[in-house]
Amino acid sequence: EIVMTQSPDTLSVSPGERATLSCRATQSVSSNLAWYQQKPGQAPRLLIYDASTRATGIPARFSGSGSGTEFTLTISSLQSEDFALYYCQQYNKWPALTFGGGTKVEIK
Amino acid sequence: QVQLQQSGLGLLKPSQTLSLTCAISGDSVSSISSSWHWIRQSPSRGLEWLGRTYLRSKWYDDYAESVKGRMTINPETAKNYFTLRLRSVTPEDTAVYFCASGLGDSGVFDSWGQGTLVTVSS
Image (cartoon, rainbow over all chains, first blue to last red; front, top):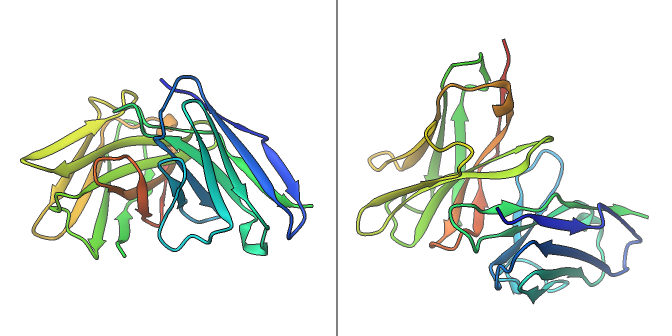
């Protein structure tokens, strides 16, 4: 199983500042990496796939980078609605898709 | 935009069978460019992909090792939904269950159902 490790567990950021979230895989997943946002009581929402492609309707302040085992999600200027949980997910290995444990982005 | 609406009972006793339904609007369960998934989330296991069904030249399904042999995902083409059946549940199966649509064969989940809390308790 490919284990996805996210860091930090919690990120405290002021509105308007940049947030950088990391995701590491225990083996290469090529660019088969997605990022999701989840708010309390809601389902996850797709933000980024193929490591760097924004999903439909996702604002340009969200960007993804990386390949292989190291990935980054950057939120360039945090808005109030961006404070949430963020998960990475690899889809390189079937049928063993796996998610990271999540990073909580909270208001500083 | 695909919308997914889940239904099903959320309280079970150990050894019973979990049954959930995911109704699809805005797409077809028989689309050859989509796939249909179940995912669950619990504090102890986090987000866990469970399985999928999809139509290409024929119907296919895949399951995570953790539920293989206990889980069945079936399409219902006439009513445009798909179902999950998980047999012999234990308290370890307590979780919020989500259905989701996949982008082709990629394993990227672009639309999600609202989630169903399933509790297994004697």
